[in-house]
Image 1 (cartoon, rainbow, N blue to C red):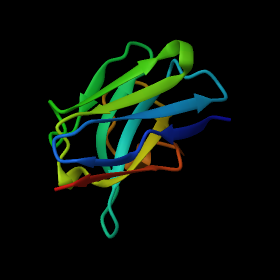
Image 2: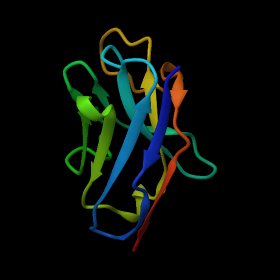
Image 3: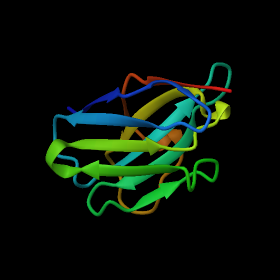
Image 4: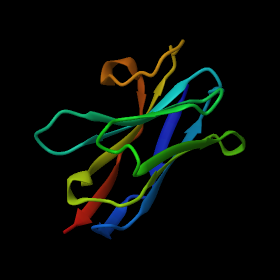
Length: 126
């Protein structure tokens, strides 16, 4: 059974940076796609960034492209989301997720991901 645990959220001013970590435990993940999503109260959860575990290929939502970087560390079974040039509209709970049925492509849809972490709050002040 795969379990995900996020860490690294917090409070930062506009223009600042934060790095989120997602520690994965359980079965091996080399065949998975991993994603970072975010959600604000009253809105649907939205895709931010994804990565193919086997080769590290990333993909991003347009809203974060050029500011966020997703990466993974195989030895630590950890996926990271480096967030730079943060804006107030980036304020949200950020969730790490795994698509264990991943085959190919760049999944962005919430329903494609079957395992989720508990979430980490990121607050960006103006």
